[in-house]
Image 1 (tube, rainbow, N blue to C red):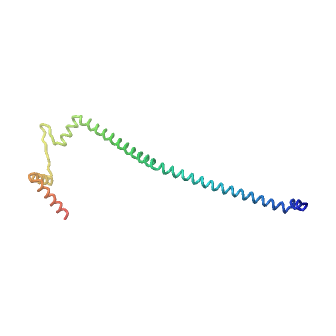
Image 2 (image 1 turned 90 degrees about the horizontal axis):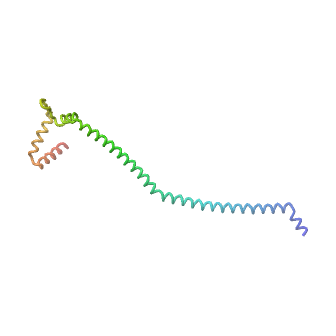
Image 3 (image 1 turned 120 degrees about the vertical axis):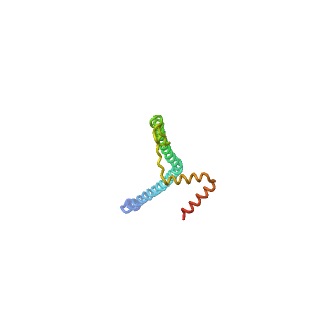
Length: 158
């Protein structure tokens, strides 16, 4: 027993025991790290699954939101254009309320003259020939006029 006791306190024995204890601690810490890593990996997988689910769940509503915002912007643009057109029409209506403007437009568009004035109309010879041809076409049947149009289109294609 004295030898065992002595052996127990020897430096070699103490170093061997210290080495075994250190190896056991290292093994335990490695096991804990591996357990933590596997737990962390499981958590990461769960987090990734939750994030993917949220992305899939929110993709359609977000797409709808973006398309509705674009539609709202388009409708607002149309509203501004319509308001501008209404303003133009109000200005035009106000001008037509003025007798001088109405008289000017009647003279230009309808070629009216005031009593005592002499009106002149200058006719372009090329336009006069077309006008005469159209008057002759008015005396013809509709299908003859249509057939002449087809013949003219065929001749122009050649």
